[in-house]
Length: 235
Image (cartoon, rainbow, N blue to C red; front, side, top):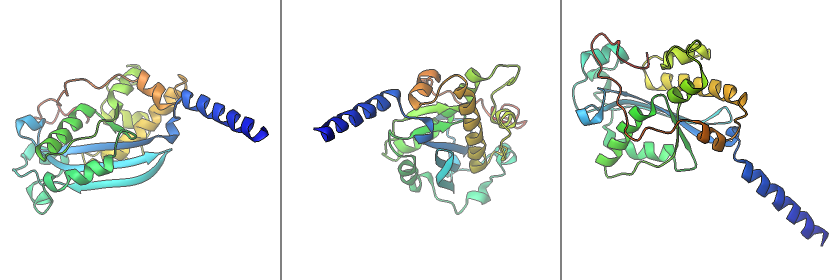
């Protein structure tokens, strides 16, 4: 009987813990960034580079990185921004050969998807999945740009571009408009935001999702890129 009562007590504690939610340090996040040949897939732009890192509790679990041949010429102003030109991606795989591996890497609904200006990246990967008869996973989404706007006041952060946020949180790697560097900068921003959220007593993924603004229903593309590069939102 003593054993039975102990088990009942353990189950009660476990149930109470589960009701409190999953602590952020126990959640797996996949942070993703893309480089592209333009502002939106429906305008004919394609993915030129993918970077993604899976993290948990501040540790890197896995990394995904590849150049992608978009199947069309890369505009000169994009090359000026990213350093990626037609020759860079000439021998790289098309998205049709990459999308399945990316979907596997991102995982299922147990993983939280993170991106800076998430609707932009999601528009491209969802379009790539659809065009290759695949389904992009449905996941909880954290947009660091939108979350930062809610956490930081405008005196500290006059804008929520990745470069600005990376400087605020003293990221070791600043954004370079290359996918993996930008992912690493986004991770530093994410962890910086987590520290601020702790001051608001937000410690679990459930609390974060309740606090965080929801993904916009219509993915808002980044403004049309122009040769002067000033309209790129995440400079």
